[in-house]
Image (tube, rainbow, N blue to C red):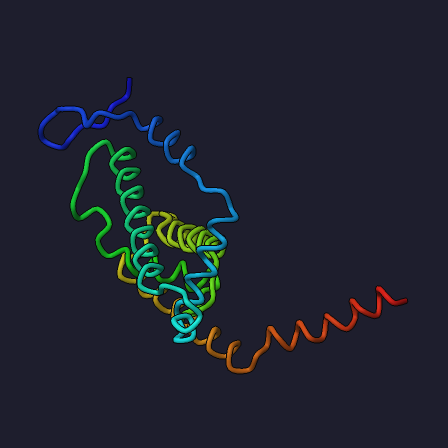
Length: 187
């Protein structure tokens, strides 16, 4: 059985990496409660939620609790993957996380974004980092330049988000498409 060893002791932690995958897959939530909690979380951002009877402190606490659960699962998966733990393993990866969420469609100002978009943004950032760190004919781009390019992409994504939100480009596009659908149904 494949077990994860604690660094420096040689003793197993007590779970197999494959059992962690089974546990994380089995603990998936149905989509309806998650969607309802997502709507509560979005509603608790404004002051009107207090007047509507939503316990905003409880919703925020549950959101932070869910965030802690996700971070714990990420840490356990990291331990299972590397078969040891290192307290500085994810250091300086904050830029990648923020860039992934922003590129995935979340607004830097809050109120917009989906989990699927964040996952897609994470895939884009991971692919971009892998492509920039390729060894091409003996040359590898220095890490500070990779981080600088990802930072520049993050700034461009934030500026594009501001531009799209200020000019209501998506809603104008939607308004142009919507009448055509009605005409197609009537015709």
